[in-house]
Length: 161
Length: 161
DNA sequence: CGCACATGGTTTCATTATGCAACCATCGCC
DNA sequence: GGCGATGGTTGCATAATGAAACCATGTGCG
Image (cartoon, rainbow over all chains, first blue to last red; front, top):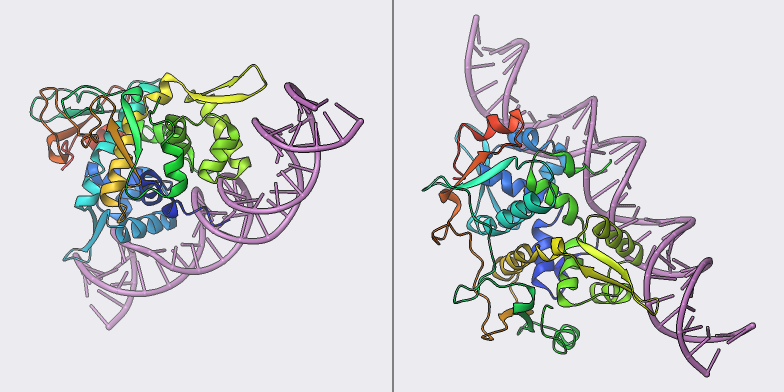
C-alpha cells in the first residue's frame, strides 16, 4: 500500500503531517513538552507499544523534532529541538479544540500562564493589526512554490469561504 | 491490533487526534476550508483512494466536523460545521510550521488577510495581556477531569520547561 | 568475578488499515 | 432504454500496528 507519502504533495500541511501526523507522533511531542525524556517514561505514560515507540523516536530524531543525547550514565534522553519547540502553537490549538469540541468531560489538563496563574485564552488567528480572523477573512493565494494544478485551483475562488 | 483508540485516554490532545488525527482527515478538512464540497473533488484534489475517502467522510460526519447535505439534484455536498470551522487555528499553525520547518521549497500556499492583502503573521500562543508565551512560560496543571496517574505526573513539575 | 536488575531496544506473529482496481446503484438526460 | 456523471462498495495484495518474548549493554553490589 505504501501509505501514500504525503511529503511529495505540493502542500505545507501535507509536509507537516508527514513529519508529525503519524500515530503517536504528536503525543510524543506533547510528552516531551511535559518533560518526559526517557524511553521507558514515554512508553509508560502513553501506553504505546515499544517497537512503535522506537520507530517514532527514530523518525522524530531524523526529522529534527527531537534530539537524542546519551547522558553520562548511559542514560538516553530525548529532548525537543528548536524545531520541536516550534510545535507549541499546534499542540495548544489542538488541545483547546479537543477540550471545546471533542471531550464532554471536564478538561484533564489546564494550561496556565506561569506569570499570572490564569488559564491560557484560546489561540486565535490574528491579522497584523490584531483583528481576530475567521474563515471568510482569509484568502488562500498560490505561493511561489505552487504547481500549476494548485494555482489553477486557488485562483478562481480565493476566499476560504 | 485495534489501533489503540486514543479516545479513551485522559487527554484532550488524544481525543482531538482520535477525531482528526487519522491519515487524510486534516487534509480533508483543509480541502473543505478551501471550498471543496464534492466527493469527486476531494478524491481528485488529494489523490486519496475512494474507499478511504468514503470512510473518512463518514467518520468526520458522525463526529460532527463535516455535514453531509443532499442537494436538490441529488448532488451530495460536504461542508464544514461550526465544530469543523473551529479547526482553523489548528490548520493555520500546522501550515505555518510546515512552511517554516518541514519544507525547503518556497511555500505553495500563502494565507493572506483579505482586508489588507498581506500575509498572515505567525499564530502565537498569547497570555491574557498579550505577551507571547513560549514553552517555559506555560504551566500544565491537572484539570478537574484529570485521573490520579495524570495528576501525580503533572503536580511534581508544573512547568512545560 | 558473579549475578541480579534497569534501560533501551529488536524480533516475531496475529490483526488491522491502506491503496488499487473493478464493480454496483442511483439520478438526470436524450 | 441507453449513456454518462456521481457517489459509493467489494476484493485483494501490501504495509503498519500491538503484544509479548527476546536480546544487549551498563551498573550496583557482595
